[in-house]
Length: 111
Length: 116
Image 1 (cartoon, chains in turn brown, red):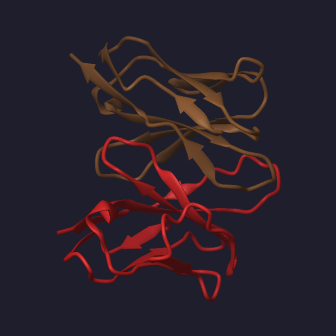
Image 2 (cartoon, rainbow over the protein chains, first blue to last red):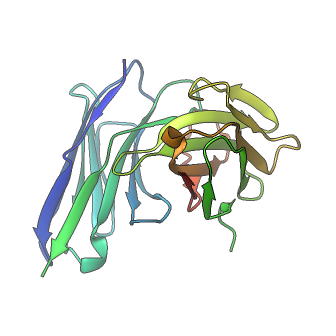
């Protein structure tokens, strides 16, 4: 079966750092994606990991451990505009196949 | 803009009516995906095209759901005899088709469907 778990909600303070965790159990693995989704808008691509380790992109970083079925998204220097849902998604093998999404983590950034 | 375009943005229909939702992918993107997103949930896969070929429709919830992409570009998701449980946001995504590459899927803003 497929199971992707992430916390439902998180709150953090403007200027702080927040880590959003994602654990997955899927029948195969061919990459993990993080998306940001503001209410009523399209999910937008943030990061992609297929090998173990940390990928850094500006204020956002994403980490993957395939042996543990675990990823996290790290957001630094939080801004109010970072308040959104963050979606973890796994792609199963065989190329450009559909993504399996978690339920998303709703992040609220407060002053 | 050059993003994925979906129409209509909002659709209200009475139970039992048929609806058609349209997706214009990014130009040159070979792969096209349809997802259904319920309130407070992540997107769930419905169906997938590579060019005009529908490669996977395992996520379609019933035979009332039908999707097509006849010329390998624009796609239409049709729902017949709509029911209240069909109320959701329907998201379309497109991507380049490169085997094994980390090509992200680019999403449209979705169609919010409400069945009364």
